[in-house]
Image (cartoon, rainbow over all chains, first blue to last red; front, side, top):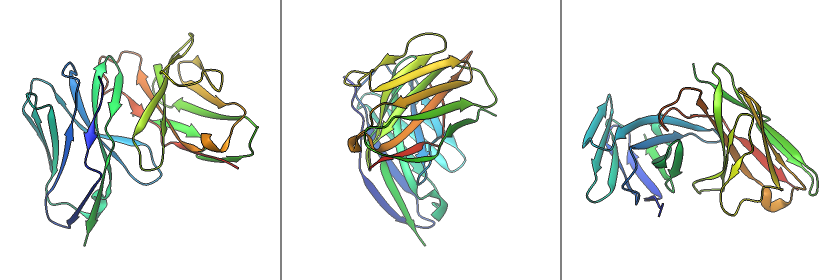
Length: 110
Length: 118
């Protein structure tokens, strides 16, 4: 089945690290994704990780993948107020098909 | 590059009327376009996948006669909500995939359309 779960809310202080977690169910996903949605806007692809990788780092973003536990996380270093948004993880159970998680609302306070 | 636009960004319509939402890929040709619906504080739910020149494929539970999708060209797909009701009020987001896309990450999202049915 296809079911992607995330915690609903995360609050951090500016300058701290944020870690957003995600669990997925489809082990056949070739790629796993992180998207950012700002209020009233569409989705912006932040980063993705190939399923045979454990970790991917891209500037302030670090993605960790535990395939055994079907667990994906996104770490944002030195979180800024501009990082406040909703973050969605997504799996891809089929070609071009995306199944999104429930979304985590990140609030960064000064 | 890879910009997707939606029009209108916001629309208010009366119950019983129909409303059309356009999704355009501005700088690439999109063989496939996707329509999602997002409920308040909820995830995006895929409604349908449309391929240029063929009928859309709808996800289970989505009424094809209510949500008409047309993908008449490689840069334009439209979603028409027919006989709209207040429960159709939602945020509708489209995405487009380039002609030679090899993976889901090559899927670019529009800014969304907020539909309110009164």
